[in-house]
Image 1 (cartoon, helix red, strand yellow):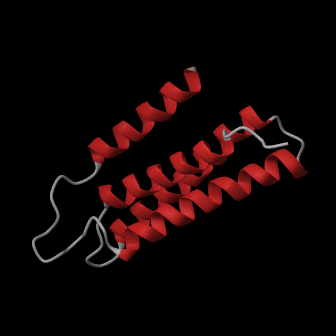
Image 2 (cartoon, rainbow, N blue to C red; image 1 turned 90 degrees about the vertical axis):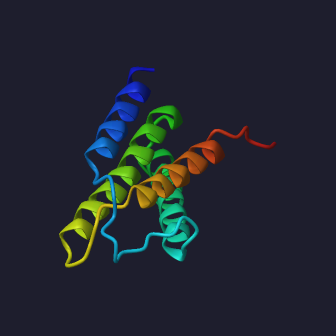
Length: 116
């Protein structure tokens, strides 16, 4: 339970540090292809790392899900900071939200009960 609160506090503080408004000449649509990529890659990174941790490294499934989701979100956050340093780049909260939703969907899939 403590880990969940720590993760949410981390993402909330990162969201507050992001720029509040985009420059007028930049567009960041909610339903752009970029958001689909962020959602998909975050989901796939979480699922694939979960598989590796549990099946190849022998970790418990409950412990591995925290590492899988955290590592995927860390990659997404890092990418936003890299984007911010590019010319005309910016830190996109919308991209970060797509990353969080992708990880959340992966955690949902991981926690589904197994079929016999």
